[in-house]
Image 1 (cartoon, rainbow, N blue to C red):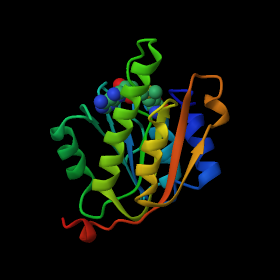
Image 2: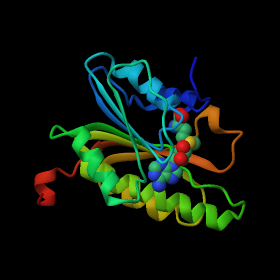
Image 3: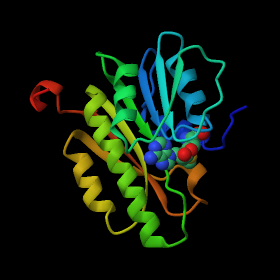
Image 4: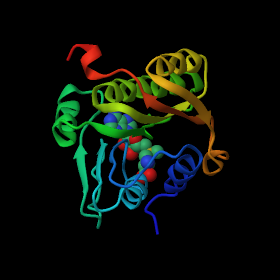
Length: 189
Ligand code: SAM
């Protein structure tokens, strides 16, 4: 079994958008307790690599090629460790299920969620190989459209998906962006 019910959300996103493939390098942001890591490890198989990051400690997984980093994705040093773990080849998929601690105040929770989603987009920009895919959770609200436009600027297309496993829960949606188009060379690094 999976250690979190959220595993089924990634399975459904993958079924709908064909994200995870054998041999892929997958980065999972906000990975604790590790449900998405389990699904990603299954899909990428023995030749693949999965790197998860979370503020919380993640209990070791059985799968050999899963590496975890404990850290805050809003901090540069965490991003540094992540870049080191991913290496030169870059990532095929950057996925973020990061969520803020909920205050219950709708606009504040939304703003914090968009802030985390923007960190995930910056990370995707740093790590994705050309043609790579990006999936990110974000709570609905007034800044969602502007964020979606910013995602769309670097990918062939972006879709808003509400996987059945998350429909009961809140205002969350996932943006699924396919085909990263901005190469590192074009960015000048
Ligand atoms: N996808 C996970 C799974 O399947 O097990 C569940 C992720 S849970 C919904 C959201 C996670 O985001 C929490 O574990 C939280 O600690 C993490 N998170 C929130 N803000 C973060 C940040 N700034 N840096 C890293 N992780 C963060």
